[in-house]
Image (cartoon, one colour):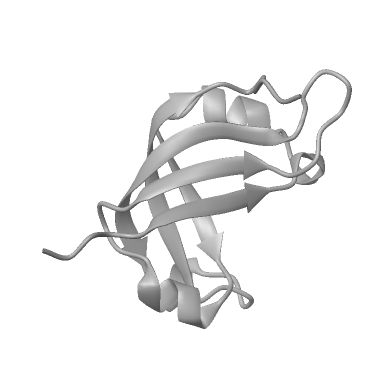
Length: 100
């Protein structure tokens, strides 16, 4: 039996309104900028989404659990610094994680 990897995808809250994006979607897309990782990602794998930075209200920590539902490799939908995009189904979202 082949076990799928469990991944941690990192976000930077400062780059856009990440909380609203997660709270208003059932599926999100995630850029994959490393070729070797794009080749390892598999449909069905679990993903923890980690918010790297935060402010006083939103601390760093795991803010969502998701499953990879599709890998997108078509050049016409990728930016020049991406090798792929992962489509993720959000399973659980909590944008105020408890961290010590």
